[in-house]
Image: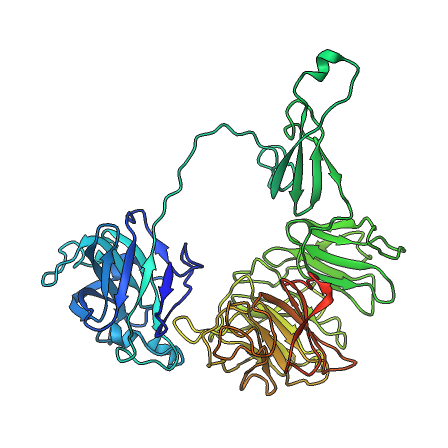
Length: 544
């Protein structure tokens, strides 16, 4: 899908199957289409209403047909050069699609999900389709659907310009084949390792046997996975037999750490890895790049905490807030989920302060959970208003004040609006902060705090051509883009247009800020006014 000049509207991510969640495609989609805007362009459309107060999750049959109304754009089948029928849904109380295209900085009540539905049905300028003009008729020959909203500062239809949204349909041929499993991360076949890519290697064998020299050389397979590099050993059917793989290249690190912590007073470490569990360096050994770590917790490994005052206590876990706790330095582990509820994020989050180390926080769709006994028991502080749950929701305890806790998943001003939340009383209650309004953003990738300014925090984003770092100095009343993007697609202060995963303000010199990105550490020496890539740390990430 291409948005060609449609600067007056934005297409929202609503978890659809295509175009980064912005485009829904059905089995009726057999042609490429264009939605064309500009002077003189208009067509009739089927208007559907949803029940009072409804936003997302409305059953299809609950879409009641209202009437056939005029809209200032046209929908064309560009494969066959003909105009197509279109439908849209709005809430009861709105007149037409003009009302639903509210400015994304407007009231949340105007931002219910208002979809456009494109049908594989020839257009008729006078008569609506008898199959579409019924309750639930938006499904009839529906090919594509999108969720548009008016861009910030624009007016509908005054700011419409000559432009179009193009949806190109392509096909991928299917080839029948017989397959044999050579990797099995989830134990469906023979529990072999996870597989990212395979490279066949033809290994010649030197022998005095002239007959053997003329035979085809045995084939071995090189497997580059998120656990390392492996090579198959079998010369007959490589990669098939259990135990057929040998790890090689132990100095080539390919695993991704979501979180890590250090044993207080020792060069020993504890961390959770994507797809590879949670591991700890051996007790009594100074860890190095050749250290063989000890397996601790299964599943996907995420954030961990090593108690800063009692090094016998460790807390980690796997996906979905499946936390586990050790009271004996990592030798044994017990469940640490008592009291947790709600829909848990896949990427499990933990937060604490060294000033109050027994108190730990996590979060779910129900709100924020506090544990006063290092994860043994959890108590919920419910959050209902503008909350929500995603895999990248995050929680952060202020480094400067253990009573200030930040939590949330996104800054969304439309539809199912979401805001960040802050507590100033140790997580007993939370207040909804204000959203940034100069650009349309969405889900965060991380929250961060300041080591000496307790009212200062950072929200990190990874949208292309948009602000990467927002900073508040007044507990979320207002936010400033310190990555230099503003309203432009590139930064004016040197920050690269890349995904951002973490931020660290140097406590010894708060003018220095380090930001972990997908290309390495980006540094500011002047409190966020200018940025540059640290060459010595290129490709070093500090986790999600």
